[in-house]
Length: 386
Ligand SMILES: Cc1ncc(COP(=O)(O)O)c(C=O)c1O
Image 1 (cartoon, rainbow, N blue to C red):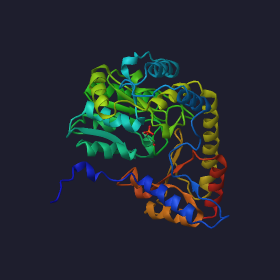
Image 2 (cartoon, helix red, strand yellow):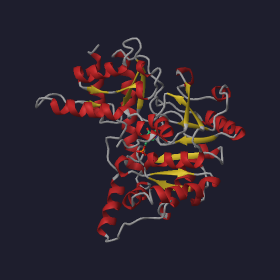
Image 3 (spheres, rainbow, N blue to C red):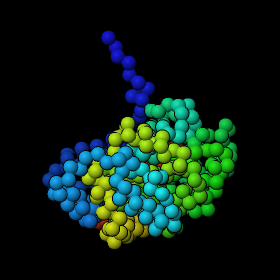
């Protein structure tokens, strides 16, 4: 008997994960003493959770507390800290009823999409984009609408692009700073998009996971401009806690109860221990700022060194820890280009195809969140490579 396989089973892979596997294999195959593979393909901080977060988790483990389920929206004390953070960073006063703790930003996406949209709904986003947006929407029977953005808009969407969509989409996803381009929607641009969405009945989802990793311009939250926007955030990037799998949503009032019901059924709650650690991470800004200072130094070094190594068409590196390079003067097959780079100089970077299915073969993404010495060594290795 042949059993039915659902449409969701055809979700494409997240190819960066395949590049990670190739880099792991290459490292394992190296003879002893050979220079190690430099990891610029991964989008996760090389640092672990801040010391205060680890200490809080250890104390909780030793306390004998059962660390069971929490309320579906998370520990109240953590939600209070998230609200205090919103006041501190954006001047926003949020009732904790609008804050839902989630299993990373990744766990927040299906909750947000299912609460806000129906199968068949059209959700717009600029390309290049973070691939799981498209893959999750598609798995849920929703329809991604891609707006190709270029260097002239810093790879970000604009109101003019939205105006040009016919029919109007049901939703819009933005990310600032974004992955893979590392560019931002500046305050006035985000405000204009949020207002346009409100006026046109388009549900805005703002992925703010890279907030705190902005080097030139201040960040703004979509929740400052719109009461109907959904904000997604996480402890993975600024807070350097990827493996703890913890994030949060700021929800508009009409979606609080629907998301709570979905979260109760889909996750019960985010892990208790990660919630304890996350709460303590809010007291660790000094350590986290030191990480960011290191990213900034790596960014500055690469912005100066990569053009000398033949990567002169770089996105403005405003935030996150990515540089998106147009390599069309060197190759129109970024997957093969990256494979050769890994093979010949032991530097792993991600091909753009994951992030932009039509133009991605002309781009690669460098991630500079690894050790500073590695980032410098990568630039050196690439200088002599063609
Ligand atoms: C733009 C963006 N959103 C969401 C995520 C997922 O983050 P999390 O670890 O919180 O699930 C990532 C991870 O790289 C990302 O780059």
